[in-house]
Image (cartoon, rainbow, N blue to C red; front, top):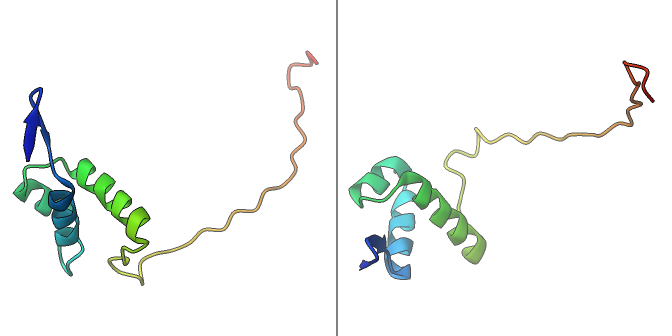
Length: 84
């Protein structure tokens, strides 16, 4: 870890190690973040980067994941005030 201008900067290896800890079965992102004195939201951001660069982050519980499919319909808008 490097400190510049009062801010802490983690190396890529440190960030990867923290993210990989969160991927272990039963791991809590919040607990891992606290153990490394990192903001939980920052770790979620690193996980996203990890997913994009590695194309993997298995779902924690695939049975819980749901997908919603939206369909869009044409809608006619009526001017309720009569101004148009």
